[in-house]
Image (cartoon, rainbow, N blue to C red; front, side, top):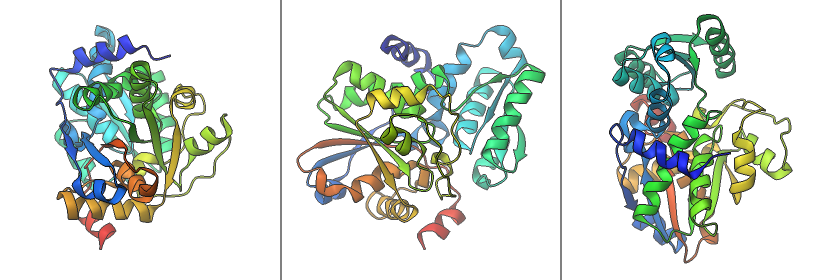
Length: 316
């Protein structure tokens, strides 16, 4: 479903607007895992997360009528920030639909970008209302994951990874709706099927873990998590499930406590404040370190957008 040429096209399309993020060696985590562990620092991307990649890809391929009417996106925060940033840069109106629980730092960022903000009780209500708004007002609806343009934009992370570490054994990617891992895994497997791709999702919202285990879409019980970007209901018709099923080698669940340990690790050993949704891959390596001896591993650290007060509450 995702052609490697589409990911290369996205790479060329977004190159003027995004950073090539660095690959950082983690001496401490390499020692713990008896392996070579690198962090792909997408938390240093414009807007503080990888979402700017897919946003610029999607918005640049809109036609003139779509650009004039604008876009609408439901989001827990980072997807909306990416869309608003790209829309502001390209002169396109952006309507961002948020759950009431969105971190105030993310709301502040969206306001600076002049996005039109609407709030709803939860992310699923935000999604439903965004779809209604797209139908009645003509806005282009942009899903954070169930959208080929977003997936291909996320897949450009893999291009940069292979440029910097072509002999990687395992790439670890956090999973919410599956857009990022769909793009990354599609590109990696097309270039070298022996590269393993591991997905990480919160145990409180284990939709892809269960779907992956069952090899089909099944009902999943969802609980609140400190990682809203990896939580919540996922559209059953999403194109990402078949991509994950076919390309991903393993799905790992991490608890909220695991995520907190990951946050502490990044501050103590890398002097980095990262949000819980962005640290899931690091938390998984800390949890699974005994299985990784001798491997060369790249972990995508996806986002840093968290207020100091919320971060302080989590780690203290």
